[in-house]
Length: 80
Image (cartoon, rainbow, N blue to C red; front, side, top):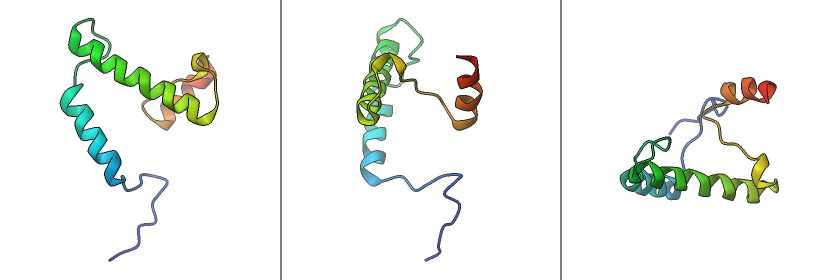
C-alpha cells in the first residue's frame, strides 16, 4: 500500500458519496439547462445540493453558487 500525497489535485471519494453519485447519474442525467422533464429533474438535484451546501456553511441561499472547478470560481468571483 502506498501513501498518496497529492491531495491538492484530488482526493479519494468516500464510498457513500460514490453510491449517491451513482444513483444521481443513473436517474438525473438530463441537461439541467434544458426545459424538458429530464433537464428539470437534473436542475432540481443541483438546486437541492446548492441549498444543502449553503445551509452547511451558513450562507444565504441567494449568495451560494456552485461552480465546476477551482479556477472557474477564482475567475468568476472577480466578475461578480
